[in-house]
Length: 156
Ligand code: INI
Image 1 (cartoon, rainbow, N blue to C red):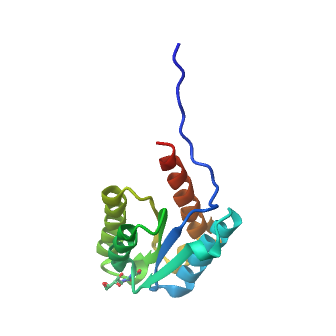
Image 2: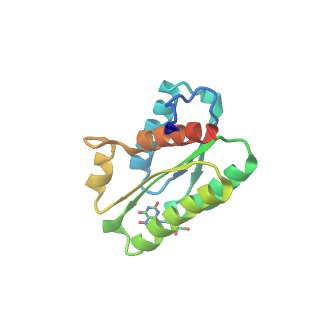
């Protein structure tokens, strides 16, 4: 009987070059997502010199820089970070939707993992809870997703 092969990605960031693109809008929260992501990468073996952080004004602006970083060939994985808060923006759906579909398009079109660490929440409090508060740090979680996906891609 044939055996099933499972491909899994190690949570080992040693030697991985990771590009982070962070949206400055709602900066107090996004700063914490960036810290969560970089701390997680370092704890999992990445070198500080292999991590680059690029800043854009808002979440809507993330995909174009993700794409440029992907096309540079300098990164093994990318992480998108930002915070879109519904309460303070009537065009929430456009900003959040375009950001998400743009980030996933970069992944599909370039073959590079793009982890999505953009908070899309109703209130500022919900954003704080997910940026190092009682619901963890989504920046750190996105960084781990980037590492795991990059590693599983290596197995093909
Ligand atoms: N950008 C965000 O990252 N979060 C938001 O909550 C937000 N709001 O509220 O509007 C936001 N808007 C700016 C947008 O991302 C772009 O920077 C802007 O439209 C210029 O392209």
